[in-house]
Length: 311
Ligand code: COA
Ligand code: ZN
Image 1 (cartoon, rainbow, N blue to C red):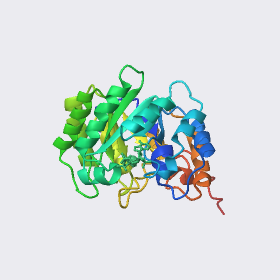
Image 2: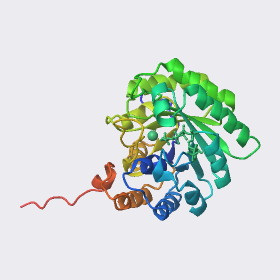
Image 3: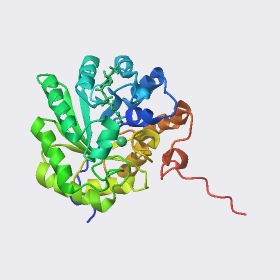
Image 4: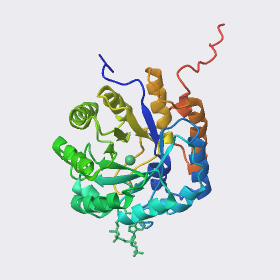
């Protein structure tokens, strides 16, 4: 039976300000980012990925990472996360007072080279140094296995290679892991198989799934993940997002669409959908173009229309 192994509570992490804004054609002003994060903080989201401490040459749109971190109002119960590629990024993130560092390595070597300009070995060496830097602090470290469901250059990645990366992260002492589908290559059967393999080996290491909707399989993949016992998902307000170093990358799964689907199916996300929708409806104005989300156009499934007048 569908959802037989699923927990009722599902955690939602929004990544729009990081994954979304990193690839916008126009720089989103710092005050807009801060305002958006402050509103998102009051919707019941578990985590918000607010920026990344990467090279400003690589991602000019997030060059204001320090200012964003300094400007936001922190709400109790929300974890404020920043993406970090290397030791330098970790130093900057710690100075800015993040709650959690999200270390990213693509297991597709070609994508890791394109995105991080490092081999996987070099990324892992940086992560070792990061773990030294955070030791003794309250800061948590999440390790993302990017291109876990396929690399846009190297193709499908064997399950053992995904699990190898998770093992490395666990051995380094990371607190949690994200399996990321960087360019929307994941399909539900693959998600079911990888979730089962993960839960068999690493059930004590909290896992998040991160999907992009590039080929329209995003929400189906969430269902496969929930069914496989995973209870935490990244998504992006309005469905914006994408990696600038992966050809053809498009938006993440849409947070409000995912929350609506999960709540309709009887899950408790802890998110106030009406508040989230109100924020999502303001997003096109912030980015200056339409966004892919469905719910901001269609409304919730119980928002009925007046019956047509009968003659
Ligand atoms: N934050 C800010 N500046 C950084 C930095 C960081 N985390 N890491 C390196 N730099 C700076 C260096 O100080 C150096 O500056 P300089 O030219 O003024 O001397 C410059 O960037 C080059 O440093 P180097 O170590 O040679 O980096 P690189 O050019 O090989 O790039 C990364 C490596 C990881 C910094 C870069 O590829 C990057 O930031 N990638 C992130 C991509 C991304 O965010 N993708 C989307 C999310 S998955
Ligand atoms: Zn992503």
